Image (tube, rainbow, N blue to C red):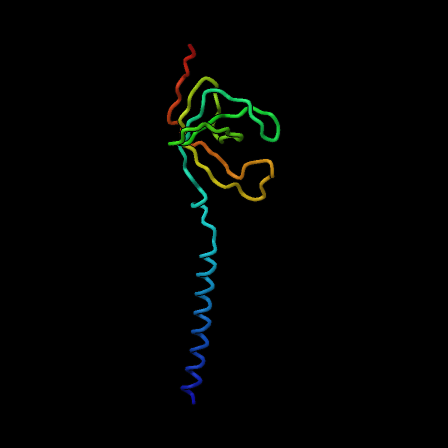
Length: 125
């Protein structure tokens, strides 16, 4: 009889241990991985700002990502980068998701300058 009680007691401890391990694994699996939200991009920035319309009429940079043929409007800013008209830029940037709450009229992405790869003066003829 004592052996049966000992076995039942050990089984209860084992069940609790297994439940604890499963809970830890579940919480770890549900944890958000911020490294997946981070992305390095290589972009070209056109030499002049252009008229565009976001929430209101404004001036935008035109950018294209590496391997992209078409220019696109860039409505935001790149932290650490100061645009100087008359220069073509090749930039390495880090793009991450912004923390909540995000205002409705802004991008959900944060662009940060990693490195200016190239800066070439545009010669107008």
